[in-house]
Image (cartoon, rainbow, N blue to C red; front, side, top):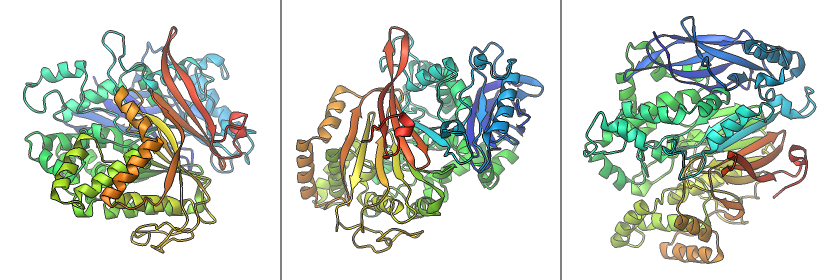
Length: 632
């Protein structure tokens, strides 16, 4: 008899119609999975098989716009979710109002159905449900009131539970958030959770996972205690998603994901020399192929809309095959060998908010004289995804696992190092630069100087012109601390490469390729939040703080002179932070207003707690969001 092995995960919710969602599950055997909603919506999907595991991505149709409805998962006629003994609230799907619709009748229908599904009277406060969807945050509830979108984000979650109950890195922010929301039905929930990389750690396994590895192979042989193949990747997702509170949270809050290095290996695709060295090892091919296969199954598919899934030839081939393993292996091997054949980046829309998730790992060009964060095809796609139809959004979010703007000293070190590796100071300095690049993880946007400059100009274009959004926010993680920084465009400073990438153009100097025009009218910010559950040594904390200091900036300028790097097209200062701890940021976007909160998980006498560290308005009108002005 088939059972539910992992999930359900609520992944995609359609914000254009408010009537469709996708739910991901892993079953124990081949079967047909059904999602049945209390309001009559639902969907079924047969499982597809990869490496002896069985998965389904169920498209749920017929949802009521502007409602919250409970759902259950069935295999055959047997309910497998929620568990019979669950103490957690029902899993629900919350949909936005369709454009121009009124919430009252639709919402009441969804609420009543959710209550009935759980055996409670409509409106019973014990029903364990959150405020009913984005329109509830719109203020008056009238059709003309702007609906709110809450976007929570973070990265770097080491999921292993402490064996002795004493967590050396502190409480897990995702677990703590889930526990709080489950215990307080009135608490405001995110509309979407952005997981910005390092959802699993293939190169840093827990004691429990190592025991499972040792049961199937000799850990004295490479890759040792690291992940070797697809089956072992499934252990990581088991560990990450089986926690009861996290499992419930991911079944209720839609999520978008993108990989970073530890999803495959530390410093993945740092340089051409790094790649040559790894490809020469006997274990790397299986690692990278299995890493991309598992990412496609466990994370990437859920990022796509039903229409995108229908158009995906790999998804169709895997589903059509009795066993999709070889189909997916060929795809993953080709994606590693020729990255231009695959696009992991994607675009999502949440009402008047546009999200562009950017692959900053697999799409790199590593040849030293053509080094780029994004290959030309990927860069062109990102440009179009950002600039196309600017009047359709009020806020632009760009998900980049790696921060665009770093502490100034670290930025200058990376740019200087890139110049050394390119040979600007000769071969001896180039060899030193490569060693330093690997040892110090110098591989962010600044380590790809031309890409940094082009991306900076793209953001300026996106924030300029008559249809400019109110905010452009780059959301990142990776660096195990949180901070806010805001760039400034000095007049007359060159905007490199603005005319060399195909795609839409707008803004005062779009396509000029010379100097930037006026500074953008939108507020442009780098918002960095990491980790969800991990640590950073005290020495590294001190280094990040020093990177923002005046002395650090002076050292950076000296390195820039030595490396002949020239000036960056923007200057920036720290607007908040650095903050250290296990944490999550949340953007609340309503109309053209934006506000930011930062919460941290802390240990207390009553157990782990979520504490607000920051509440800040990002636009002048945001007193309505927090009830007072906290503009930075």
